[in-house]
Amino acid sequence: MQHVFIVGAKGFTYGGYETFLDKLTEYHKNNTNIQYHIACKANGPGTTDETKLKNVEILSDMEYVYHNAHCFKIKSPKWGAAQAIIYDIKALQYCCKYIKKNHIEHPIIYVLSSRIGPMIGYFVKKIHIMGGRYCNNPDGRESCREKYHKIARKYWQLSEYGMIKYSDLVICDSINIEKYIKNEYKKFSPKTTYIAYGSDITPSLLPDDNLKYVNWLKKYELRDKEFYCSVGRFVPENNFEIMIREFMKSQTNKDFAIITTQDDKFLATLNNKLHFRNDKRIKFVGTVYDQELLKKIRENAFGYFHGHEVGGTNPSLLEALGTTNLNLLLDVAFNREVAENSALYWNKKTGNLAELINTVDNMPESECKEYGIRAKKRIEAKYSWHFIANRYLDTFDKLISNKQ
Image (cartoon, rainbow, N blue to C red; front, side):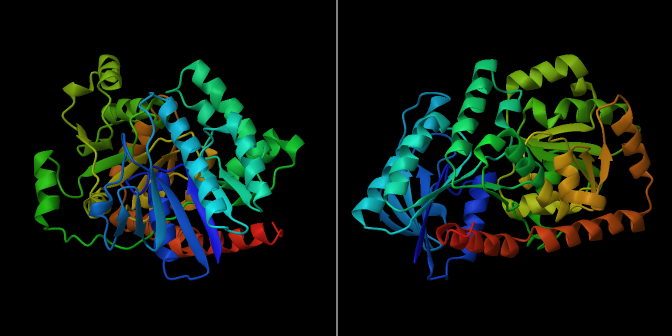
């Protein structure tokens, strides 16, 4: 049996890595040839309440079984931004002790994100002594995120350097990220492979007249199929400022429902710049953690805005392509790589997105549906969870067999 230890996600709460773990373990739960060990946060934001998971087996206060994966909880001190770094370190310490105690042969340790580069060499040495392999998923280019201070960006650069230098394999969820890794760190000749993030095209279980959905529309004064939406963290690099500014310039009678995290300071800064509170079409509706409701909202949105420009294969983009007919994406390599000809594209030039909104507002319904058909075919062919889960099985097998 192949043992795979995964470190770096919060657990099974809503989020990119968290959804990935949920789906990966679900698709492999009946596979007796692989055993997952998942690090989960025991305290702080994003902590999973395992009692709310379906068909979970509670082993103790700090361990449980979910999708036949062994899940272990890690406590970390409340040290601000350093909490995530300590969390990863303590999780790796747990993995090494567990492997040694249980005499596990040829384990794979898969670290998500690149937070602990300065310390990873120490752990990789221990992993190799135990006959294991270390692989890393660098996510996106964290050092480019505007939300970080210059010192933090410098740390991300240094950390990424270490994570790649010591990797037996770098798993990239974007072709463009893989190209970046190979070029930026060519002196290490990093072994890389591309495995995208997954999604599905299964319709929401909620009918259009479901009270949960109807009441959500009523609460925010939205009309069914008469609104655009966007889903993502409320951070500068997701370009909410441009999307709001351009939407306000457009002539559309539809609304813009912004499903995002709360950041009162950033919100106030944007309002001072744009005065969007004077435009009744702009609706900040908070977060939606109910996955069936979120899918129904996406299905019945007239269009979806995607302004992400930093990172790899973005989960919210895949989910939008699997549900919404019209997807209006910021024209960057990551987004074109994923959607190809199944979406429409805009740039940051003043008036560009506003003009696109005016154009699609008058687009024939048949043309809108055609984009939706293309998008779903794209997801089914390249980004289905079944396809992604199988790619991981093959990759883990090759990594241990020294074929990778």
